[in-house]
Amino acid sequence: MSAKVPSKDISVVIQGPLSSALDGANATVQSIRKFLPYAEIIVSTWEGEDTSDLSSIDHLIVTKQPAPLVEPLGNVNNVARQMVSTLTGIQRSTRPFVLKMRADHILLNDNICIRPELTSKHETLAFLSRKIVVTSLFLRNHLKIPFLFHISDLVQFGTKEDMASFWGGDLPDVASLLQGNRSTRVRVFGNFSGNTSFRETPEQTLVRLWLAKEGMNISLSYPCDTSYELFSLWEKVLVENFQLLDYSSAGIVYPPRFLSAFLGPGTVLTAHEFQVMQRDPGSRRRYLKVLFSKYIKCWGMPRYWIATANVILSGLTPALAAKIRIWLRSKLGLTHPDRR
Image (cartoon, rainbow, N blue to C red; front, side, top):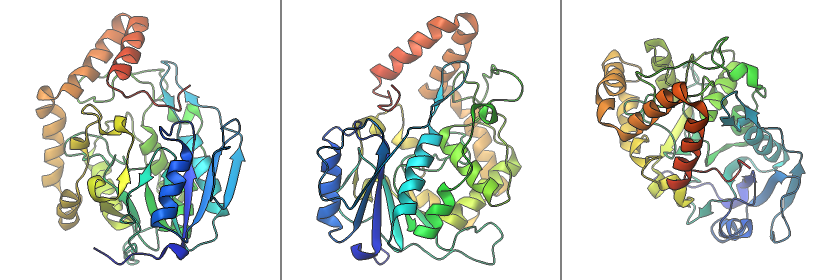
């Protein structure tokens, strides 16, 4: 394990809605005080959130919540909200390192606070001074589930400068997130995202906006777009700019819904798989594995069949498909607490 950054050099930014925390946001604060006793704690949340039980924090930032980005089918992308609350907290921080986490996460130790590795400045795809440490939840393993540029945005640790760079992209609007000139595209083969007008998930939007700020413009036609050029670029960007810890050893207690079988901890990139990728990022041999999973192995995956059923049913009876999707998400424990 790499050397730890002392807590006196760390600002912790707790961002987003406080009401999503099962045990109250103060439980998150107290866990930070226990394992990072000298850290600066910043809570960056929204107007209307109950902050009365917060104690032992250094700064409270309350901002107006951006409107959710809703597409014609009713799907929601909340990345603008996350970007605003996170970047506002980072900008307020005064320490050289920043730990970004949510109010519904609790620290078990300081494992996440390892000193980030230096990036290779000679590499054209290294955009940071040091790598940002992320956990494997939910950094999708695109060799299993075909989502490229799908970074883990739940818990991150890096220098203040690098974190501000990553979260400092231009805020998106709905029009920039839609698939071409049509409100939706009915895709069955190779589609794990169901019926959506969005061309990317929130995690993908976050990475795309960061890369655009660095002068590298990418475009996904739909969330599971996997051309070889995009695949190769993502693997190289990933290994040059990020450092991975397995979620089970990162010292974080996650909300139970994140560990549901459907969301699939088994579909995320493990630290071992990340090491394998580092030896041969963006190779055509690895890309063949993406295509195999996307178009052949998928037939044995319940997640793919649920997404396919959603696409087909949406084409026949959109209203019924929407109701079934809401019911299924509730039964599987996938309902997002911030979608209200």
